Length: 334
Image (cartoon, rainbow, N blue to C red; front, side, top):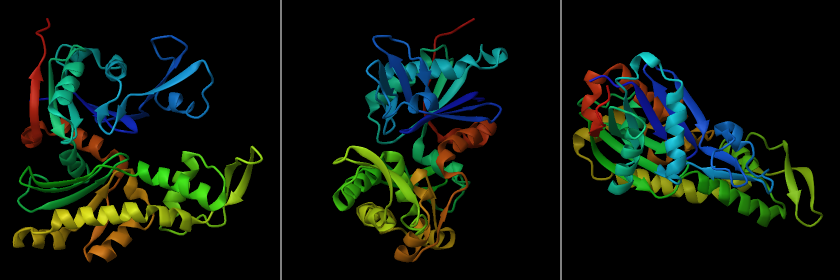
């Protein structure tokens, strides 16, 4: 069965894929003015207002942790994505959506019905962990086991997959957003200044590489109430990340503990592949490899792994049809 669109409603971004294979990505935010119902800015343009809102501008988030935070915004995102669709296929519109295994059944039903309500003929569901592994170019349909660690913004998931089936899944109920919050708190405690989330992320990405030690970053002094530039030691970020890294290590050990001898052989041969924004931390793959005594690598384009997985299913529906775990038909349209 041919599918024409894919939707990945992530925690930070909404990603779309069409039959041509083009991947689009925008921040999962919308900005409205006053009591207006329709946003005047979407995506990256709306995200630019974060922390810069005035009393007339209100920011809203579409998704959080793979769950609709604002169902009406999610519906409007679908409308926006379909507004540029090829008119020649509008009579046979079929879409796939990426859904986390952690999403409750009722929420999943709501997501399916939301997409169906926009004139879709059919909506299929693919588990997010399977899409991440597929987007990491792992052979999820093969007999050998593959091992994927998705380091998302709001959740981390370790998956063991073979033969088109997820054999084991382990999840942390937090993601790399917690690291940003930890760093912001530690900078305030250690230096007595306030940093933005953007600066916290810069520090986070330098934590394992040691880069940026001499760079002066913008901070806000709460005592003088004035901005200034100062050097911030990446070790602050390193210590802030200790809790996160410890949690990731325990997640990995829990997921690979007690595997069959055959899967252990597959793990030693292929190692663990990282995806998600957290995998971009410089040197993190080396740190995990040294601690686990296993090969650890970062996928190509790890941030778009789920969207890349959707793209592969759109291009090879016959091969990957077993990965579609649920589907619904819409109303018949002439």
